[in-house]
Image 1 (cartoon, rainbow over the protein chains, first blue to last red):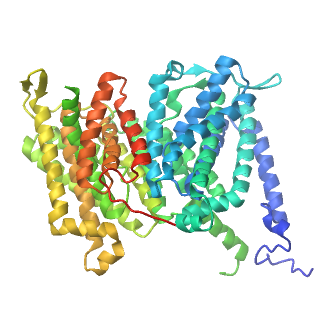
Image 2 (tube, rainbow over the protein chains, first blue to last red; image 1 turned 90 degrees about the vertical axis):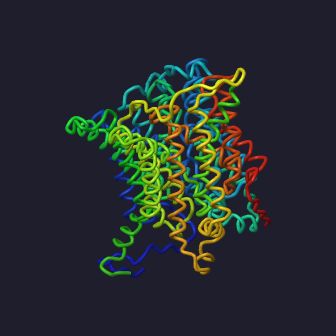
Image 3 (spheres, chains in turn orange, cyan; image 1 turned 90 degrees about the horizontal axis):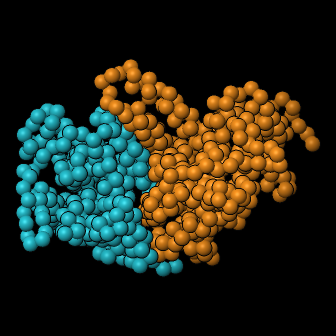
Length: 353
Length: 285
């Protein structure tokens, strides 16, 4: 094949379906992916516990955010109760572990399935509703599920301790060790989400999002697929919740509030609706922003004494809320779109198009 | 007793729900920030009354005017730029507006409850075994009057009718010579007014505290049960939710009222997806 070695190709062209379907298409991408993986694996050798904890938080949030993005970004159903479903998963796996002695590996799947089952129950109103009213049902889910956990079940109201994840004699009880577990889960769940959304299922979701009547006309069973999207979304939440509980070795209600649910929505809005990479960008961005405000907030509180008590928490809300609104107005397609612009620029340089 | 106090609070929920309906009817947006507009309205009233020391009537008028300004400003700055974007981005923007409003309130006034303000003179009225405070009665009356005024406004005034038209289709109304932007602006402003009045009333009963926004959340099931596009439905839904909330928390305890209201919301979704007074839109494929 004739190639001009100096100029980059004007595009990536595949000459077979197998090549076209690859996620990692070019040699450069393969090298970059291997490098990224190596950096991720070697990171605990240099990073401090603080940074690792941050990264574990990001990993878990990526799993939960991916689920939410599948439902909201791909299928077009708004969910403002994601952390309640996370709670279902977290408490299921925590209770199985703490009271029946199931190891994490046996409890993580039931946790996801329990969350999915509860999610489907709250998704049932979509039989008769079109549009975005499901947001109200998920808000109801957040409020009702939190109430049940607080007053209905004595164990979950107070919080209880959970054993760390064990593999043989190795216990994942420090950030350094748990990091690898979170990394494996995050990578696995991300790949699964990426592939699911490129399949028949993902295309059906997108069709429902873009025009539900046309989708129904093409033979997509809307109700079934919406419930399926709900189930996948809440399954991801359940797995994320289970990971969180085993990581903290403590299951408590305060990890799963309405505000957390809204943070997840903010993450996928900022990152980009309907984009797997976008979810990761958004989660990283919002988590770092939160961390920044959590550092700056108390400093501002100390410096400016005229601020009332609790102003720091208000600062967090204002800051992240405004960032999300600005993204909604100025870049509705999120950081993922910006990233694709950067990639296009790199590919086409030095030409405009 | 529980039923009566439920009706009292229900009138206020109905008023908040009306604000919800106002925005939904003219733009199709579910305004998650309604409860937080209520919070801001209540705190603004407190600011005029306590910090500036204005007499009660003046403080109320100022707070209501400020509430209108807040609503109109939100529309002008955030939602107008989203006209033409998919609904989902408008709705998520209202969710984040809720965060920003709550954050602004807690940055300005802190997270602790504020000093109590006595809005109405305290006296009790006995009807057999039922005890009513004058505060309750006045609050309920005011809420009903404000709600009634809004309903009449929708039915009979020029701008109210234009709002109902705008709900049907922005482009059509624009071509009929109605300024859609202006109408949307006014409807957000009025939603702010409804939220502020309700905020003042709730604040005078429950105290001026951040928890008010939680109470504002109850307006969502109220509006939905009545039918999101029906002002009368919102008022009745508010009363229903008020009674349910008060009876359930009275008998079950443990703040079961709010989850019960949302359980009813989900049940309504299954039985009557357009609410009990809403316009049914039948779609077949």
